Image (cartoon, rainbow, N blue to C red; front, side):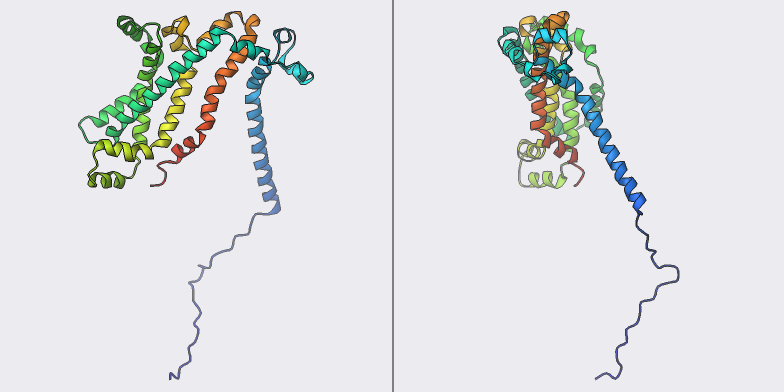
Length: 306
């Protein structure tokens, strides 16, 4: 048995190294911070409400009769909400021009979106994971093509479509949108696919998987958020397009934006068609955006954690 009793030795610290305890913020500072956050939130709400004023005015105008729209402003409905009616929408859906234009818009937007997503994904994978000569040059060229404005290619493409017999048809509008949507699609997906952990690709190759199998079973499932985000962006852009539709689509193949633009020539007498038609045209891309909103969040956060 030891005759020496254990003695607790206090831990010594060099002089001047004792951590200083910082006092917390005082009541005035805390109150100022709360007021600052409250003011910021109030400013955001005010800007959002101000931004929504035109949309609210359009919605109210679409629910008023042509006589009421000609006599008073839309804000007068606050005092007489019972004067709102759905007759404008009934007349809109009964108009063959509007229903045909909506169907033409679907026939243009859906193929243009699917083709851009499919071709863009197939072209982005080799740029991200296959080694070949000129890969970086192709990527730089695609980045430069994104900055090319649509108006530059209208006249050359119009001549090409005329030679091919596609001038004025829906396939001509779809081909133009696909051609201009591919550079951005390939560049976006290439950057997203490049963030996939290399261990997954190498493990799939060691297991004997070919490039097509890796693309289909590994890259596409992991790239689903980027693909969905690209699809929404492309769909909204094509759906809201007016310039390409005015140039390449005949009247019987015109989308809703072109038909509504034609109604603007006699705005006061056609407000009962323009207001509900514009609101219906806005509702479809807004619905697509809200349905796929979670994919935007995933695509923005993808690549931040490896």
